[in-house]
Amino acid sequence: MSSRRDFMKYASMTGGAVAAGSVSRNLMAALPEAVIQTEVSTMPPLFPDSGPDYNPVVTPNGWTLPFRMRNNVKEFHLIAEPVVREMTSGFNANLWGYNGQSPGPTIEVVEGDRVRIYVTNNLPEHTSVHWHGQRLPNGMDGVTGLNQPAIPVGKTFVYEFVAKRPGTFMYHPHGDEMVQMAMGMMGSWVTHPKGKNNLISDVDRDFCVIMNAYDIVPGAATPKIMTMLDFNLWSWNSRIFPGIDSFNVRQGDKVRMRFGNLTMTNHPIHLHGHEFVVSGTDGGPVQTSARQWEVTTDVAVGQMRQFEFVADELGDWAFHCHKSHHTMNAMGHDVPTMIGVDHSGMAQQIGSVIPDYMVMGERGMADMTEMEMPIPDNTANMMTGDGPFGSVEMGGMFSMLKVRADQPRGDYTDPGWYEHPPGTVAWEYTGELDQPERFKSEVSSSNMAPAPPTESVEIDVRKPRRRLG
Image 1 (spheres, rainbow, N blue to C red):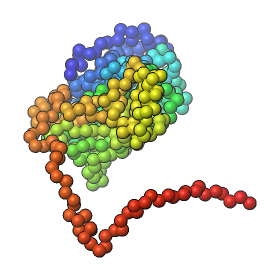
Image 2 (cartoon, one colour):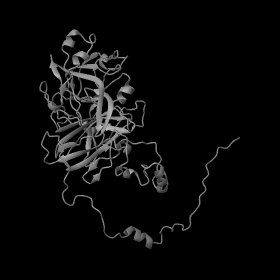
Image 3 (cartoon, rainbow, N blue to C red):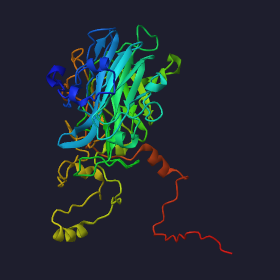
């Protein structure tokens, strides 16, 4: 992991991109520099150097937006703009985002902070920002036409409010929402509690993820913005496995995961090897008496959920959405099922005309991970993440929780693959296969089930017809 300083550069275009007339002269003179980030590495936590102290979050394959204190106000500067996002190695997408990336940077504040966010619009159309979940003045809620005029191209608007309650929040446009969210415009917002809160625990590691989805045709780079449900790329922080970094922790760490869902379907988030409690929802921290142990929690559309656990089991634990098509990557869903169909003869005939033709799916889709089928340039392979024992056969919304005894505190770097103690890996059985004792008992019983018919039985099924007249 590289340091934040290595990857940040200050945009020299800030002054030229901001048009006069959108903000007052005093604010124009004070406009904070926009920090731009284009790398896809997970940035280390950004510890505050002023104001109340807190344990900052880490955004996998993302970063936290620096702020500036000015007259006791935390000031941020977001640039809405087209970006190129590497979703996984070898596959780049033309998206819209903030400050060089999609999703935009995570914004972190403390309960009671007064915040001022400058939003400069470098998109080809107007936009706005809705601060999802915040209690704020109506005119700061960001719904174009209802709460404010849209931010025109090239203009800068200012949002200012007090972060009234702690929790996990999001931000996204509320003007031409269908297009702008389908293009990747969104980000996370975390408000830390001010002082001790009996319902909010201190944790050692705190991760923040926005779930988003795209429909990008193989060989293309720009999402199809008219898609309603049948997306083919399901992502965390606009990354797809194996491009999603692992969640690296120290054994015994108390860990908090924060997930926001800005796709158009729900996602049952499932963690292997550990139980967790859902400690926070959109409404704030969950009462202790209402918490229960889970291994999967559903995050519905437009919701935020945060859950906590103690990482006490060593190993590399799968961590994913439990909708199986969401762990595939560039999957075409509109194809027939060919399992059990021997079409090798047909494949031979077609191959005489189309030399690269390949048989697909007659034994299941796992073969796809072994095929080296030619694919268009700039296309994400399906299910091609590799593990220490071969292909993981996963893609999309999949990562790993890596728990290590020697992971230094505060260190989020990938420790590599887990070295299993001898005798703790599932092994192949090669001994004799004996009949189960229960089956032997049934065979000797007078109540044994009748033998199946030896001759085939033909069944004529007729579709009922509606009676006429």
